[in-house]
Length: 244
Image 1 (cartoon, rainbow, N blue to C red):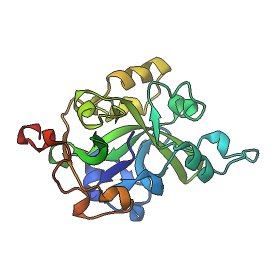
Image 2 (image 1 turned 135 degrees about the vertical axis):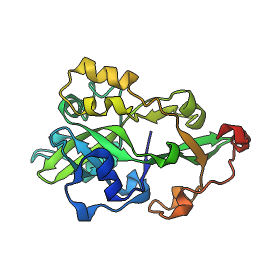
Image 3 (image 1 turned 45 degrees about the horizontal axis):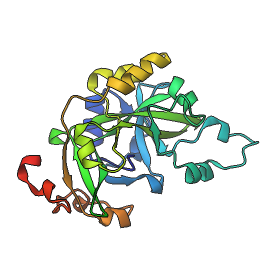
Image 4 (image 1 turned 180 degrees about the horizontal axis):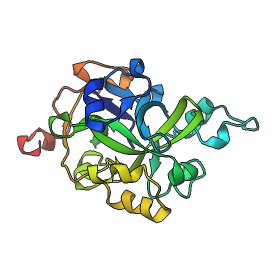
């Protein structure tokens, strides 16, 4: 699972690196900590409009919910089914995600995310990032509820050796795409090609990580440097300098 992300970059740097401009420039504000349960915006490059970066509400609302005969509103649907993450091994089998996996894939921009580590009955968040806080892209799915309103979800996969160590309970990780797969992900692919990227597309660039304050569990809107500052780990193996 991945319920907390960061995108602490100026718009100019994001535009330069991605080669895309923001669809609504005045709407973007960098953030150090976004929590899915507050339903914030993430910033996506969608398959249907890949020349721009769009805000998208975190929590995918399937197309079939946005109809007159739906018994749930979009907000009620997300609250009930927690569509913040889509398991890459299963999304073609799930009604909520199947259509998006086929033709509504996106890149979700970030420069960090938070994963929980469990030790002796306690959970502690770890902040995960690339060297120099480089920008990267999650594999994502989206829906478009109207001309200006996107919703999105982050694709997750089984954890590799690094993230098995960090996310040692669920042993999952978000699918951070290698640069070589990013444009492919938002191109016209068949299901076999999509599954191939899900299986092999995780970045080859190593992640760095460190424990951070548990206050981000209580304060879902927490911002500022404190959200990412290193603290002592509950699990003593992470207090050995060689692990970082």
